[in-house]
Image (cartoon, rainbow, N blue to C red; front, side):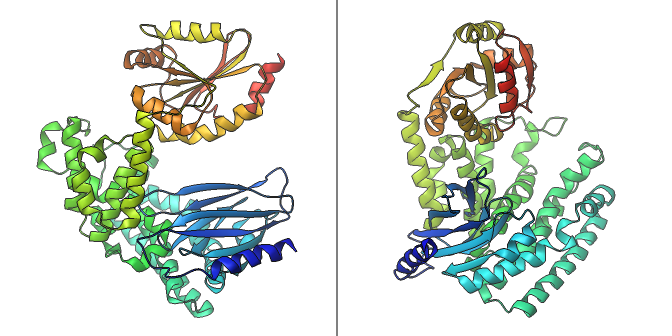
Length: 505
């Protein structure tokens, strides 16, 4: 009965769907369904909406007592969406779609789950065909034989590796032709499958130089590829609107082109020559780097649509750290180059949100903000231990610009919720950051606990005295005020048992 109600809702919403290729106005997409044989201890299903240039939108929905779920989001363009329970798979969506999907949550492996999937609502035939493609792909050694891939990366020189990639591409082409022959999908699904397969070539191409150096313990002086190596990325061009459906693969390509083709060509700019150090790094003033980056993307991205997407990615990445300075400095240039509403409108919306947060940070009501002026690292630690005497203390050293640090915050928030009322203090020490951005981040994260902002000098002192060589970095302190463990491994997702053990001592 409940499934029938879900289907009725979908059909009613579907009746109002129109003009799915209008990129000027976002429309709601609904993905509803049921996880069969789900584990009550794993009551959430997760969605990653692939948005070109804008990063993925993460959605987490609870399963009800029968395993039903509903997720929704606004979308300007067609795109694929990762659905994850124990493992993940892709669903193809269009603006205005309402899709119903059922799958067996008791299965561990992606091919088995793909065999269990059933679709209703919009794009039924297309998603059934997409599931068949994924089953073929994820069951193929080309995908899962990681040892062979690693061996090729380590042992082959550049020319031989390019030949190896060509041979792998022939295997992909054969898989694609078999998919088209056996399944007879529509044209959009063909494009999606081809782009998804081809991205394997471009990903491997982009990662090879760094991975080969790492595997053979080589530095830049001992081995590197010429900048012309990255010209191979231009084989993907031109980028067209018909490719939008393959949001995951195309988002990856945008990033690879940005950081491998554009950035490496930027390093060859004559203006940077005088700023190059012996170790290969650049020590140019920030205003020089900013100008070269923005105008370098415009100069070195030959495809007009890709250019808009790379610029969007650049600004969005700054926004991820609540940093709006680059956008404000080059706003006219950016707005004159990014023409598509599905790119510029979300950027402008995010800019306005961050600007409001910076000017009026709405920090969680029970968060404690601390600044200890003119204090050494030892004095800061003594202060927080005195404040939390007799408690277990969990310290998180982070920075506003540190993506891995911020990625851990939702898990930290959940850990605090679980341990509320117990004798444990959650302390967050923000290092090497701007105070304004610190408060904006706290407003965005809505993170409770005790928050310390450290100046540049204090940050340096903490790093030196307590050997904080990278962030995120965590400390576990027992009730006696003794540091019992520290390091990057004490992430909030994995530290609960250690804290509980200390609480019992």
